[in-house]
Amino acid sequence: MKIAIFPGSFDPFTIGHKDIVERTLPLFDKIIIAIGNNSEKNTLFSVEERKEKIANAFKNNKKISVEEYTGLTIDFAKQNNAQFIIRGARNTIDFEYEKQIADFNKQEGDIETIILFTNPQYAYISSTLCRDLIKNGKDISKLTI
Image (cartoon, rainbow, N blue to C red):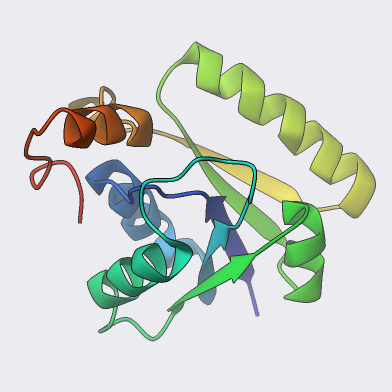
């Protein structure tokens, strides 16, 4: 069984994130959308709110589950028998960052990382942008699930 983890804070989960999940679905038997719970990070939405919203977006797909975790993604992947980690990259800065982590995960846990480039129509969308828009009273419904 091919199991993949799609980790992130997902604060909030954007249409770009959803696109990455949908594009990788044919590659795996199971995808775990893994919400990292970092108590030091100032998030806008609680883990419970994020988990509920994401689970609702994929409620009709039995291949997808949504879970939260603390600690290293590689440890969570091992605990769930995942052989792959899915990541998205909007630009070369994202790619360089993701490659460094992918190299570590391969070296330390023999876990492959699949990096998908964001579709151009979503490349400008980030969770940080969405949080800033919310804080300034803007509607983000077209950018998030």
